[in-house]
Length: 538
Image 1 (cartoon, rainbow, N blue to C red):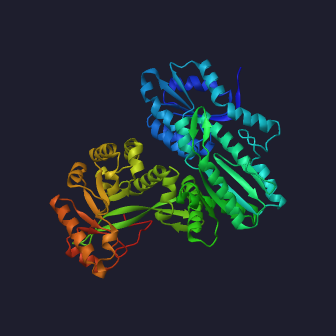
Image 2 (cartoon, helix red, strand yellow):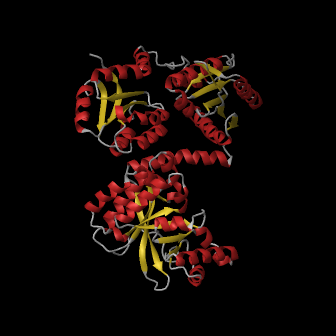
Image 3 (cartoon, rainbow, N blue to C red):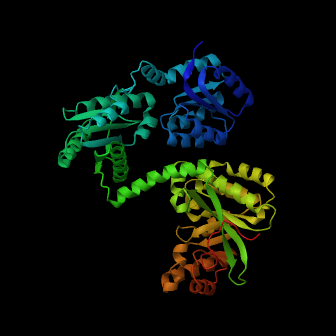
């Protein structure tokens, strides 16, 4: 009986009968087999178990957006899609995301064995090479891999490391398929091999990356070497199955000092070089601000993931005050992160969570903890939602569950969304989600209003309960900025015409408070009243 003992496989199938049947078929054939009934639990298993193969039923809720996220996290994962005959019209959409095979219902398990063997041939080869103790070569290109590169670095003969990343390779993968993409990598490897000399060595790194180690100490000669590679691929396309495909690289360069540090430095340089576009190379400069910025980005990716995994994100509460009465109307829930004994603001980890596709996990954490905190009270509070939260469509079901779990009146909860969210290409989906939230009894506030170009008709369509004026127009009011006063006055006038209360953010002193009061703003928040606090009087 065929066996797939060498792999980790994750299956997401919401039909319990099908799930049980496939599980019974696979659980003794795959070394590490995991299954989930929905994409939310599936994502958690994916992040924890790091499967090499994903089996996904296209009928599972949010299957398409889930696969989008998975492909961003691991573009090389092997994906087998289960799809009904009558739904084959949607197959093309999934193919564009980069699936490797599809299994059409009704399911025949022996066909699945054939599919698994076909799509996992590269994994089988990699495993066999490792079993033969030939683990020092990349299974696809035959080039020395990172093990041999480390040995070469240990020898101490090389002075520079050159890290090459094929530009837009994920797009090539989706457009032409994994088999063609693998052929491209093999061809690129051969062409790069032709550029090696007695003073250089070529290695295959992960995914679509290659590394040259150079004995050259002169940075100018290293630069000439990179120019030659860029120039060669500018004039020569890669031919695969009658297709001519143009290849270009982003290149990061670092001087070899400490071995592990040198590789990281090349990574930093590469990430910055990517921002310049294809066909650029960039030397690591430890004192450059842009390199430090890339270091911080990479560092915060790891820190953010750890804080989410260890439940280290906590809600803090800042009061929103009625300007006329001076009384607290509600609290805004703000995320804060704890790491190594330090407290961090969301500006330091929100971008990383978004980049890793984990922003919805952060939102769920904040909703769960703030609902638990305010349970059984009549205190009003507001929580920020991102576009990702609204597009993932997990939100309505999740909130229904939390309303059942906690004694929370939905009319006491306001969800704040950025003005820019209402102007995106997915407007129809976003509007539907916002209207569903309104139907459930929640209130909606437009956050950071005044930066984008919202229209009256859109504001009427969404039926906002509050408008929060962007802090950019509030914080300089004390400097007698005529322009900012005019903008705030116009926003307040428009809001009053629509009978929508306004909130001024970033009120940091009494002078700004008096100005926004004179301009007719209804509510305010900021450090003048209180800093965000972990505990409040209830």
